[in-house]
Length: 355
Image 1 (cartoon, rainbow, N blue to C red):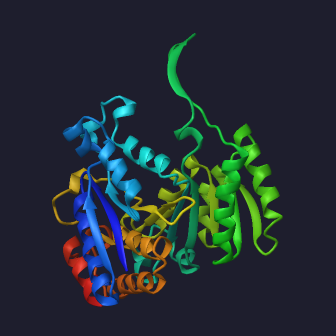
Image 2 (cartoon, helix red, strand yellow):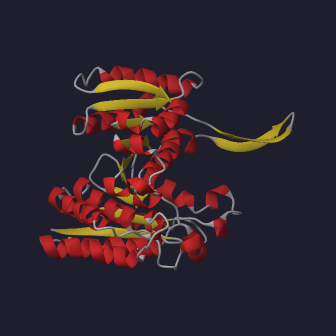
């Protein structure tokens, strides 16, 4: 089979980690008889520098015409003073919105070989961490009405959280369907004791749960969820939540695994096309030093193989290769716990060798 993948390397370490994932995908193609055709486009800060906007029309068109999108990272302090509509992060929001990618899947699993790199107490880590955060991606505060005005205490600013029943139902179905393939537990995270949007969220999830009697459903307030992720993460299977809460909780969950450099994500809509990216940022402070961990991007490519292309065997082979290399003791700087480490490119080479 031949698959067209649009690459959005972006800023900072984005280009180098995308290069690692491309090398692994080419190795998968050679091993299993597939062809991956890559087209590289600009988005984020580099697009602002070149075109004056974070998401050029040609970039969006390429994404719409692709079989899937692989993204590195966007942003950096260089562009922090730009107005909101010109910030690099607007490229991500634009791609997600235009491609209809409303469901973000962020798995967090602690490999036993990396227990020492996790901030969890040894007895908590021993119980295991293997959860999936399903984050709503095209609604909520990130897309609601926003602006600035004047009030009694001077200039004010507002961002509005809005969710419709339909938006909650479709992300809820993703969570329940995914839970059926995992541990058959869904925890819905909200702030229903304070927010009206969360009350609608909870009511809608409760009604939907009746369609899935084989899946246990529970609710948790977001502040408690943040605490429980540290205190007892093994209780969670699938967590489903809003755009804002999911953004925060998934970054917290990433630290349980030892490094944010290990965490992949998939953004999906109604079709098979998705956007796949590591959950970390552009890390401009280490860009070009060769120490960035490529694993999150490589595992994002594995999610693409499985979820967009239906290549489960190939995806499993990549995941097993990563596990094999980590079990051998190879570490990039972020997971070395102060010990010896290898460059990111060498980590990629070893994963390809294991594949």
